[in-house]
Image (cartoon, rainbow, N blue to C red):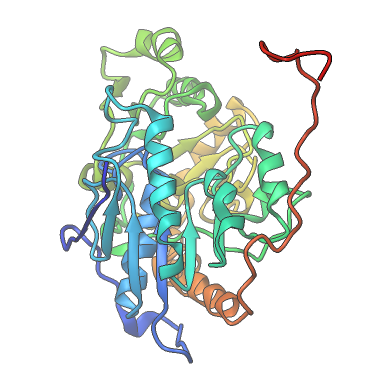
Length: 392
């Protein structure tokens, strides 16, 4: 299958160049942005990796750089689009993820020489091609889905430029070029000074995201709960969520797009983010704060970096503390929540940080291909060949 390559100008967010601080001394860069092909870029509903890749690609274009976005063919962007697969494999039951990923990565690296820098937002797989080209690649580590993938990051750490999305997500075995928090386009989020009278859960419906805890907190607090997001664990949904649906107390509205997400976040009294894992970032937390809605979260992973306890939300360790936080949430200034996002988590701030890093990296001498000696191939003694002869 040949890659679909085109320019597309639909649904691209606008970024005000006057707000950006980046100023290049070498003119426009040629940047290849590698998005995931699990979902369309930007995603219609769920897809945080694809959302960040989209926000950055649009921002780089707005700053005057020559940008190619490697993503699904149905993606929408103001950059040049290279789409080797038709649609996201999570959205198409007929897709084979391994096949799509192979086509995607091979397309990127066939054209790697066309760019000054590659911006990898597709996990560890592109690293396995990186010794075959001299173009530097900046890999954003969006999280470690399993400890089993860490050896791949470690194996390429001598040539890689890793970006952590939070200090909490830095792995002790890896070198990092920078920590760059995610940023959002504030024009997509409406600040609402008054709080609503329902609680909200927004995210993957999965045990580690604490949907069942949100239900329990809402019940004890005496407030209705709205649940929005993709069902990632069907058995968990049937056992822990579905039995509570059907009345006014708990409702499930499914995955939501940008407009409905903005409305739900802004109308909530608080976002409940009672996670049970060390979350690398938590984009929905920042999105909630942007509408003025404070967040009640478990202090795991990046939550203490994002939430200012007692100002933009509360960090709690159990259900009882979360219920108490709900009772106190009305005392928080919703304007402070929005102001904090405007200071620390805007798309412009994120775009500038990446461009500053790219500028530093492209000034370095190009690395010769296969700079490091290849790892010796393993030697193994197998069974004799069918036509082998012992007397040879």
